Length: 332
Image 1 (cartoon, rainbow, N blue to C red):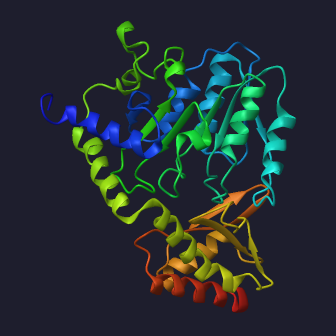
Image 2: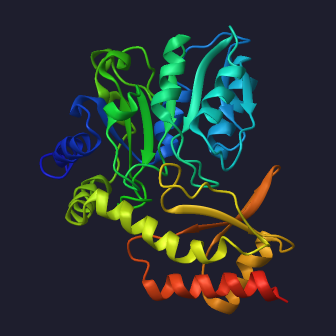
């Protein structure tokens, strides 16, 4: 374990860093996005009354983490409402800027909104945070390996993600990026010695753990590199267009995702007016053998459709036909 299996994590670290465009000394191998992001959300020192800004579409576990800090440390969670399918990036940037106050000490932003697949303008929101001297944590759970990206394109200091989603690595794998200059002042989730204060590996101090999971990340990277991240994203958008385009003119169909390639990729949320999303999801699974996720939000609802590289043309066409049937005839 200690001589052969565990040291392999350094090769995984190097390859992940190369894919993300960061220094290997800025990449910690974690178990998922929750561990990565909670390290950040719990790793800053706050005073009572300090505000953390995010949206009402961010991931529930992150919201729960911040609500726990409200109870324990007296901070204030501020959640803003933004459109599910914005027509411009500026709508999103302006939403954050309007909510910033002198008490705002941290911003949490999802690179891709898990409810809709909406891609957020991370570089602009990071720049907004720097303008006001506010750190920005980026939730990349549904972004990394869905489409090509590099750290310097985002210009972020903190980025956490899962690798079992779009990289197709084993469940129980993720990474946390922390810019070198920020490592020393961000507390680890679990205790690490003083000699690791400025070492990215302090975020990996979780005790004895299986080496197989993190070592297999290398195999997932090899698989994705063989396809090519550009081609992979193009495939996602092709599959989505194949089922979504025929639905655009249906009167009862409402897309809660902006379908322009700059705004989304593989994930898409769509509603059929008059049909409960849970009932539609159940009908698709029971009658058509198609699995989707129902989405409920105070401002919108629908089903989230997530094609992947293994999704076939036949499967996409069956989805298209089923959705057209539901929109025109109902599901009774």
